Image (cartoon, rainbow, N blue to C red; front, side, top):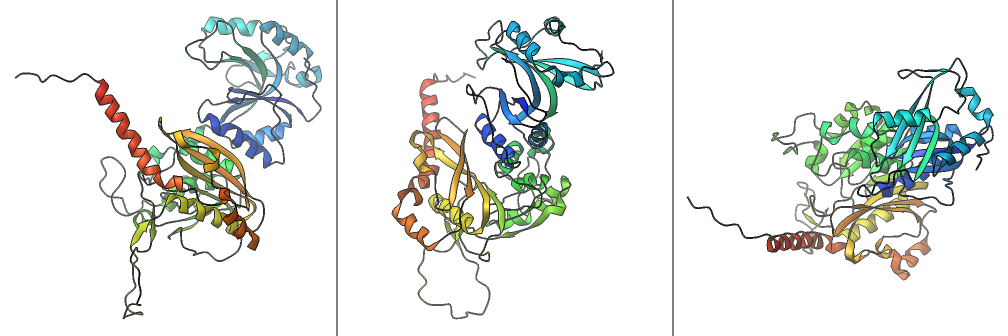
Length: 469
């Protein structure tokens, strides 16, 4: 089938990384929406496939997406595709010659790469596949080191590594346009970071969250559970001004025991600002401060373009807020004497998420996004467990599996309207707007699952006999 392209729009092929599969489509949709474009896949679109064909885009749109995405490896202008080599040839011969000609001129150098998904080809087999494309009217010379244009033959052998077919399920050929930003995962690895903690967010997921939030230059981004600032690092990379709060004084100030192996105490310059300095984005650092996320410390009004956070789940970091279970009936005698440092108490997960959504409703700009992680016990999970708010629209809900019985969902919400008095009544009347108490037992269920797994393993393993001396 011919691909009819105008001067600006044609069909493009995205080659995607096969990790964080659930996060790929929301990321691409978010990045396209930054340019006012919609993701327009064909009717037979398969979300879990490593190759996506997209329509209605310009080359500038593709370059914009690839300049930020960590889920896509490469993008191509699609010249032909088919289930067999014969179908591919027919498709290529039908591709508009005016689209091909500028890249096939005599003065142009080129090279052709062969990429196979889920199968490794011998070198001679790759050469044979390249030679089979000799019907294309290339006039220039081959240059393997510094070609003017790069073309790629991509073959899809399916997703099952235990059942690899002899011939590919589908074949694509196109002109390379740009690579994604997978290099950021390596260059910003937590292993190489100056200041880390027990719960520092993985670099790849940090950039995915920033892309889901549509963070862009000159935005103001806030993290209410900032920790060691991994999310601030990712957002500052895209030119956003960043700030955050956390209840943990030692983490905010970078003091106390170190999280690195073979390092007992943190150094004098281990802090969030130093992390941004490490990556050359210190200019975007606003500040961080010790604060309780359950307490109103910000002035009223819209302040932030995005709120991105990873709340504590009570596993590696406790969920705490300031306060006391004791009822205080009388004020202290020396009211204006020494300052009082409040004790901490349990901060239930249901309250964490209710406070977070309310905060976003009041302090996000219209169209601003809230992106956060929601831990769930998989056997009991249902969509009704995802917290909602009258002022926020659910954009995406992606799962990252943690174990056989637990996972966490990356929730992306967008502010659609400012809060009104009627919203409070609506929250009381609609059960979807009230905190889900089931989240409060996540810690117990998490450790219960580990205990059951350990017990089952012990029961299935044969008893070890004691060696005699």
